[in-house]
Image (cartoon, rainbow, N blue to C red; front, side, top):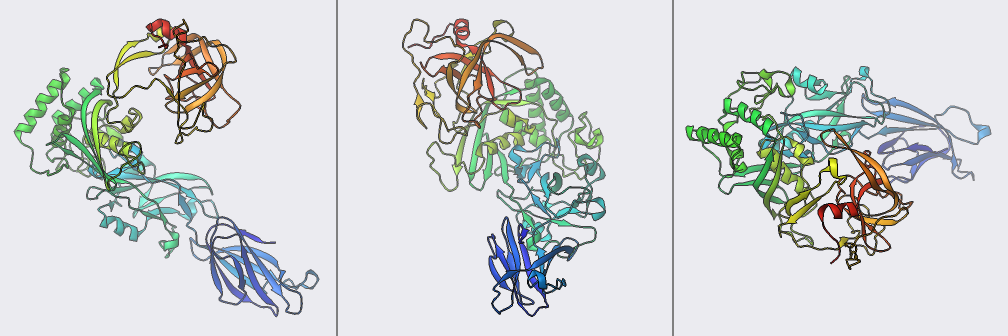
Length: 632
């Protein structure tokens, strides 16, 4: 019977104690397939997702190659290196002697004891929140690196085994040459915050079952790095110490993304640089959580900092004029006046570099404890292992109008605009906002970015009172920044759900806008086949399940509004893997497939967001409330 293996192994003949010819045969591998002579010292490296090896004998007297009876044992070459021993008993079944030493093949596992199952990600030291898309930004200095690992070893990791994960010494050197320093020193509070033990740069992993995963955390200083995509090499070690722990075959390499964000006061632009080019952004208007902004501003005013942020051509020091400008700016902000958010970014950064503070030192004026559990080591100051970088008390904000431009490297002319979508450009733009304005990375969930230079296309003209009108909708007045196409977008080739276009893939659908004497709409009926084109689940079809449903909907503030006589649409039997409607599809119109007339306005769905059903306002209620029509 063939022996089954997976991954990369080295097979070596250690014993041949037989008069018959011996060999081993590998099948199903990517590397190392074929018959290999059973000669002591002969070895071959075999690699593949799943492959087999069979030990065989030949009496050279007409028997031909026959399968041997094989015994398989397991042992270790070193604390980390597992070996399987294949021992053969040759000859026909009736003539075997049971010695299992006719051919012995040592199979050495060359795979690392673990795998890194996703790209390592950056975590802000002040809030312990993941940076947008996990990208490391130079302007943030010391950051934590989250690494999700999985036990791919032969056994569960138990505390007595002393497993730990680190970064290979050669990799630390390579990262250092790119301006990224791995910081091996951790304070006790830091270790407690992450619930991990760090010793000599290795992260202890006491218990982890085979196939299970867990996330561990390293600390890196990226303040001297440039934009790039370095590949840290992670290694495993045991308390018994394996001298070959960092051999190339034992390393797990994973790419990280590094950007460099700056603020140019001359142009008033925020700039994010990545290997593929630069993104320049100028903010115009923002919405701010006033209550928490006031708290943050008050703390910042009481604790000035002196080191300026990185910016093109930066240099110099803080003077009394900057203090006065910041004070006046804060007073205007708190008084509700119009302010320039880019100027705020520049002044706050200049004021709060935290130069000269020691870890755990005096930090007057801050009542925000941060992640470290005490005002003496949190807030605008630093926790254990401080790096002299300020961490602002976060508050919610939302950019509502801004311009941006992209300078690709090399120049790129895309079919749908200037962005090369190989990398997460829109998230890099958000990094600029999150980093240079020192705001929590929750804005990633608050801004939907695209390829248009402006996200604002108009202003709300009418808004339904959801509690009394039984309608969840609004009417906007467009500002003319985009063209208007009254057709509905059909399934597109790059949509997640593109298997069932209404008319044609990558096309548009013309709604029937002829005058039917009823505002161009129809009332839905149970059983009607309908379709919609949503921002998230794209173009999908469904069937009207009910036209008098009751739909309780939980609002953002936790209150529940109950809508009555609503339209529910359910999934069709096929395609089964296509969600009908999901969060983000609100505002799309359900159109009757047989007449191409609007029948309902999508606004809600099940909380599991799996897309099995949708809830919509009857379109007649919307038309009557806002006095609008769909006919030309």
